[in-house]
Image 1 (spheres, rainbow, N blue to C red):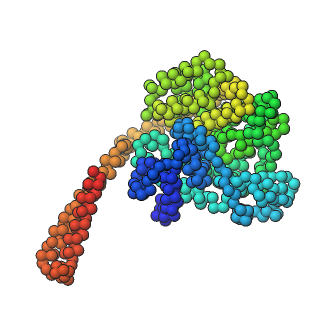
Image 2: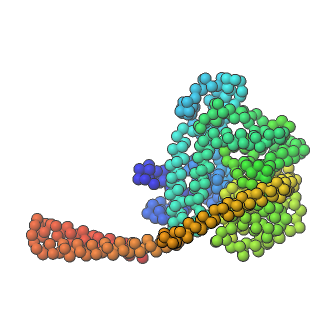
Image 3: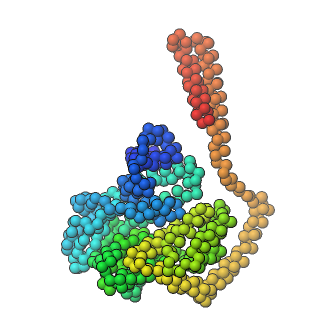
Length: 548
């Protein structure tokens, strides 16, 4: 980070550290070696609340960037304990609304004239979140719409906080050995990409269009229309939906048959997104959907989506099928195929752990198995044995767990595995279809043909370089950075020690001459040289003792 940017974020960094200490997370500051600050601000005792609640409240107080970061972390059960994940589900993304006179500036910055575009505009927000506010309006053409507007200067706030998070991640990686396995810098990079997508409301609009196209012809799902001529990066105009919130349908006075139908429609919609389209809403919680007439499910939030390519979708179906059928060997093969196995993975210990896990479910009727809980237990075993967990798969686990929880609130007899089986079977059949087999064979033949054509030229180039003496092999050393840095530090100290010694000798000789300007009866140049050499020597000795 350049010095000016570091200076601008200094006040915010101090504020973040203060809040962390207030909520009892000062030990993290100790881990990342902010030692002097930590000693001055060590708390007497954390608030009398659970660790999970304190963590959630801390994120809420830290502001929009950290609220969004907490929402991302809520999908990472491979990183955080279960109690923290459960608490993050309640993370509030509702804040005090910004006054209309301030929000109105956004329209001007986007080159939009409210009076020309809208026949009516209600300046009292329908909803106020950390990044944007939503208003009801009516277009000149008569359609009622919901207008989502980014908060003023939110980009500056987010970018400043991201810079600080990147510093924290780098410090964690450097000073906390266990953190390297979590890849904190990679998590922040993923978060940067995710939140920058949310700061461009056109991205959310495009997600809605893709989602709508995927469900064309499905009478059980409705997706609001996006009014693109009225939308910009900072303003998104969407069809206004009037319906009943999904959470309101948990009411036991609603007929059981109706609640069962709503649960079935919602589960089928989410499972189709995952196993058929490979494009799914990552957080389908009750606040993100409405129920319309005839129990039609209307999805509203299109900010956070997960994507799965066809190969991953195929291996995922195999893995889920193996999980349902308690087949540990096939589950490990699927994990290896999607790149979860690394050099650090403990495969020998993984298989017995998975067998032990699936044995706990042996003999249970499928209806009694909570798939979300089972998947989270599999993730916990995977984490324990150091497999790499992909973020898109964690979004999927989050989506399945959420829809299962919603389904059970609507219907106590809800069976997520019963709903999932046809979709998994369809994905497996699609993967083994003649069309897919023909495509795989065609791709293989093309790859072999390309290799056969290019291999001779590549070999000739290598042989020519060897003949002309241009062939070289580069070696990359890993794990030597710290010893090399220590060696450089030792050499620097040695050089400084030689300089201090030479300066001391030279200054002493000058003092002996007695010539030149005098200070306390001795040559000034000599006195300054002796003093400087002495300070340098003392600093070298102090540094050596301090490091030891």
